[in-house]
Image (tube, rainbow, N blue to C red):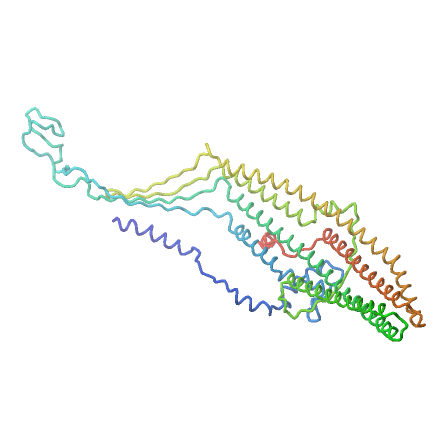
Length: 509
């Protein structure tokens, strides 16, 4: 076989294998096109309907998703879970460990090696050729191949004679070998376990993001809804104050009221109008914040429906801590992170054990072909993957401490939320039972006097001011109680949507 033939076959085999490799295709970042299409994003899509159905499955009221008449809080939650930009980013980042887990555990690719050598020095210029015994003459100064004959004649070895020429006919040496790693250590199976553990940890971070997003959205929705009610209260007060100011102005012109007193009412009326303008600005800012959480453009034609709710807390206080150990997404996330650290340490320990390398070899030298078989494995004598094992062990210990710290943080947060809820409920009840009746009675008495023409406009102003202040305090107390109640409910009954691809793929096998 010639040198060209000996190299052609392995080269063809390598080219055939390269056909199955991945190819690269450049994908430009079209930010301008995305910016143009974002304002027209539709929120009535199949994915939003699916998320709305999943959220409504655990709710008491299972209203269908219908954004045409405006978005309720429940409907807005489904939109946010689909389009919130931070959540979309976290989901996209979780695709990285998912892709790694799907492709983990493959055997290492075979390694093909080849070399081509040529003799630089081709030996002496004399060789022997079989040609039967021959007489070469007398040469007493040279010892022949059979020694010096008694007669002083030099003889070549029997059957050979000297002929001129090169000692090596074919000066090329061609060698090739194929090495295959046999994972007898079991490392690949552990590598798969570690990769899926890493994915499950990232998936848990998605659930935390969804849970936190729903918490922020509900809190922002309550703030915006309360501001909307504050505007109604202030607008009503301005209307009442305008009526009193008109009466005071008429009395001042008739000489029955001091102009300074009438002017105080006019000042208060203008001050409340600036308050109303400030509240309207705050409401618009809060609406834009809600749009940002929803992932829709500020100019999108989406109507929001205000609502303030006080959800019931069905879990008794003694059972709440143990319930959080099994339900809180942050505790579940640190459990998953610890399992990933555990699997990584297991993998690094397994890497200490050697894998077997075997494979055939071929060589062509001086016109002769040779076939062989080789094997080898590393000997874990000095290195033994010490650094990686020590690092993975330290990471596992850090994950254990992180889990303990997370439990402390969650339980402390539970205590703070319970305290907020208790004091907010007490404050709202005190206002409702003790302050509101007195203010209502004061306003009612002044209205009766106004009908009789015996009212003191300044006293009426103070009564109306006390009434509006009390209403605003009631709104603040109701908001504080609703925020605390919703925070406690979200801790005890957390909600998330995105399923685990690890479980889904396992079920589909």
